[in-house]
Length: 392
Ligand code: RFL
Ligand code: PHB
Image (cartoon, rainbow, N blue to C red; front, side, top):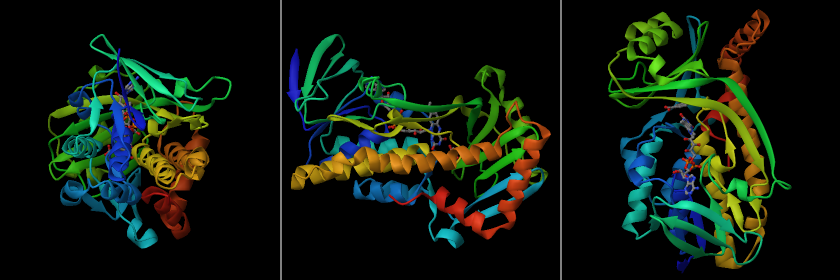
């Protein structure tokens, strides 16, 4: 078995793992990333599109914000619609802070390039990753690449391997608490090389269900439809998608919609999930490995970045000052913010979707809440503060 040593072994080469590795590199801490897939596979996943200011700052600190600043779009508000009614939540007025529209795929590409330019160590196509002795001072990770057994000894392990990874399950069942809510529908996403229907995002609650009009750039649009949890992509040819989208947005907007062939289409389930604690011995969970939010409000990637912020600062404090306070309080700090973001994503999801069990009363409640939000500046401010991102 070939073996090596690093300070922090990072499981997962998605945005959490890459950002943590790049920030650690900047502060002189050595890490190795183990990624189950190929680089191309990771970069083929179309996911989040909205980045909070806090994450933008972290990307800047990591030295990977040049392209985002050039090609990303600052949004100072978002539109909410129900029936034929549309109103705007003004981020600039209520918080003084915009959000950045720049795809997760691009963030990940920038991070891979930065790691490659600085001789970052990333092992792709790792199999059978096992976390060993995580409760001791001498943890190690074993894995295989193309059948060859390998071992990494380290000080700490960062579990950045997403919802289906191995890290979370390495925390004993007896200490791990999991909180979950499954929503009885999914989101069908479509990417098309067409100009966005509006210069801002539109979240729409219609009689036919939820729809979202989003974008990546002037000629790349991302649209979503609430769909049945059992639907398959093949059930939704492009024509059916566009017709359904038109029926779920106000007529004025539907009239402006420019359609075209899809370049990607996928269905994501909706789930709220949190695991506690986020640290066990030398293992620290980060991002989707520890929690999932429904995408309403675009918080998945941003919450992953907030975890990276707390963990990176804790590790920096440990290596630079030999002070354990940051790592000892990592789980508590991260979870305090995670639960607030869970609340916002849950609230916004409940407000905007149709639930199969909804009675006409629940529908009336949604409309009353949307009208309250439309007319009440304080409610708009609360929404804006959550949408642009809670402080770290
Ligand atoms: P990721 O991106 O899932 O990356 C984890 C990485 O770990 C690898 N991995 C392993 N590597 C080694 N050994 C193992 N045993 C491993 N098991 C897994 C995986 O291959 C992967 O590369 O987690 P990370 O880095 O924490 O980043 C989190 C974000 O990706 C996530 O929060 C968001 O993308 C969530 N999300 C969305 N968020 C939004 O804000 N807006 C969206 O529109 C949006 N759409 C989505 C999404 C998540 C989706 N998933 C997870 C199914 C759409 C989908 C389909
Ligand atoms: C996206 O553009 O993919 C996106 C934007 C906002 C969301 C979810 C997804 O709330």
